[in-house]
Length: 322
Image (cartoon, rainbow, N blue to C red; front, side, top):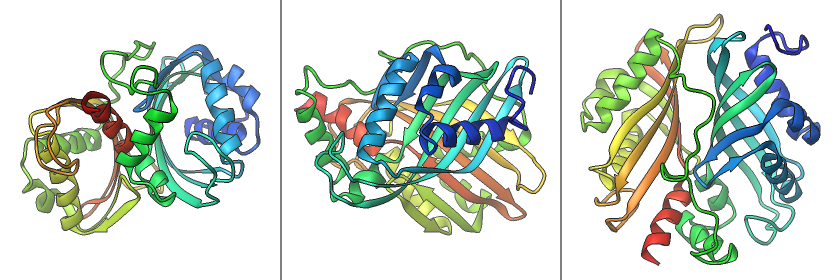
């Protein structure tokens, strides 16, 4: 781990370790050290430049959810310490909505939800990030629907003219990381599966997925076998049938004591012009930032995790339709 603090034995230990140090051990000030001054953090809800903005957002989240935990489920990574490494980090978070904040008046609700984050690190510092939280799961556990929450958030942020603008290709910022992952066979395989599904080849699901596949999708939805996989991907694609699907980053790995696995960051750019998971077509422009993880076994893809932010898709649509 050349260039990194010797207390971290490898890159997954670094990613999981600094996450706990920042959030649970309250080492918020370490963001000055672990995040570069000009870091670009993209999430479906915003694009933030600079570690000062990250520190402010971290403090606001901890004020609203003071008992929040972030349990690292996996780190799928590529690169080298010398040239820089990219982690696709999957976390399960628990929290209690104890105080007023971004999610409105405190509800006292106990939450469980996933997060996926792609982070580029070099010389003991993260300088580029793509972050997706399962906002659908968060707001539903508080009693909202994602569309309803998005409308309320627009109002609380000052209306359409003044609210925080969701991330789109128009307001994205270029960061230092220019890589596309690695050339491992499992990454290539998973990227090909997703590309095929997004090209309406739903026959790939029974061909490539284990019949006992366990799936985890936005809204905290867990499914078993092929049916939920088909319903999820069909519902998404049906809402945006003509949107351009792009694979933006691919990692595959084989590690001791782990199944072969892959991480794919992808996007959909186009119009909401179909009937699917997002209701009546509006014809409005939409950008979907998605991250997917897969684990493979002897009978095919056995676990799939996919996240995008339902609430921020609705925010994009509401800002265009009123």
